[in-house]
Image (cartoon, rainbow, N blue to C red; front, side, top):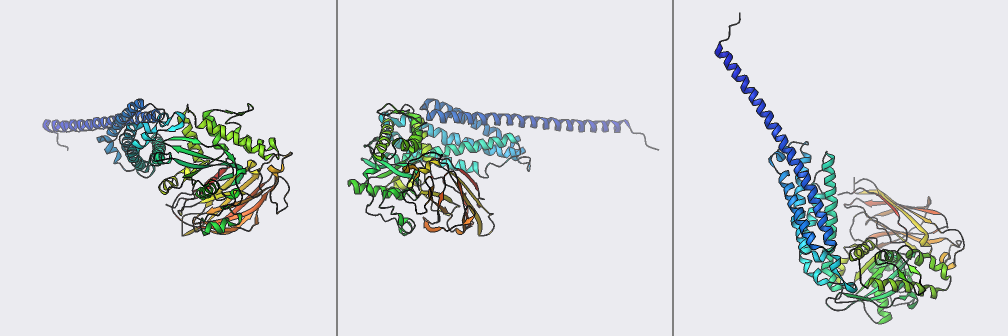
Length: 595
């Protein structure tokens, strides 16, 4: 028989239950409060991150548009919102949530992002705004296309410091410092942050490099002179195309002028040679590139062509230029898109839309075998564009973007005879140099062997694949497809014939040399042309093995060349540089980065 509970026991149990209820209620209230606090901080962090990103973009755009006052205001707003986001992402509930294994990943990732954004706004954006004149094209380019390198030089120390800070922040954003997350919105923010920091890093790095070398190169320490070669990429050469014309550029105290443009008819075919080393001599010697201007740029390494052109001009004029520049009709089209059309003496308009076709194709049909008249026509086009380019520039930012696009595509290349300047140029797209490091590499170089203009109709596809990172070596394959899209109909011998035709190929056949500059240490196992084993000429250039195949590409046909290789397993992302011809080739890369 159960003992009857006393009133005191009943009261004690009731008090215990009330305490439990109160404790549970308090715990629930705490949990709800913490969740609410965490949610509030999350909203604050997300909103502030987005505002910081938007203000940072506004500040950068204002700098480039020449409005430093607006850039300063936007930079201050970006920094304020970045610090708010950082405070929210480092609050107590946020730190607790971030400590939870796996589930806390997005919280930790967001905290990392706020740290990077705060560094971006405080260590990079605001100091750059203080030196904003150096980044403003409207201030950098003065009347008559004169460069205000005084402002650029003054900003150089700040740009160097901020560029280094930006590189570090970019590395944090790209590497493990900002982890992948399982929440889509946070992961998208992470990707946007990485893209934004990478873009700004590139901008700062290029501007810092310009601040370091531009003043001297533009005549700040005394007059400078540069040989400029105009490449005709309807007849392929390693750096783009045959040198069809040239000019001499003069720079003094930031002002640039161009001496009268001349055609390659002014040049001889037998100059005193230049010693570019035994590998160069063995690989290219039979075509006499250091003596015959027509083959002076068969190598894709622009500094080789530059030294040859410098030597040619010295032998022609007695003047030793300080550097060499190369460009092509596609780059001219980018410039004309900014500065506007030029008018020929007969009233014909040369525009961004027609300059490539006119100079690369129609001029040959228009003038037939009258080479003198055609070259004078092309000289006049080049002269008119140069005159416009060295006049007053209404859209300086757009012009710099056009020149940057041309440089990125290899259509604008620069070499300096001054070692310190060249060391800097070699690290940029302007240097158009073959890298001398061991990272995976597949450089496909086309050289026209027929002396015609059929490369205007050439289309390329390039595919580079390689095996896994296991072991010390792996197999790799480089596949090249060349299509000769010369339309049917009548064509002049100068366009579709051959200067030399050892194969007896019909008119319209593109006789070409296709070379592969492979990864350092790679071995060629087999090369085929349309599935049939072919013979490869071998050599070496700047540490890269070179494998060349000479073949005809018939009119209306596509030829496939397959290089089968064994290459060393090395760290680094694979690179497939694109030779600047008329077409925009399809390039695919499937090569693991063996970091």
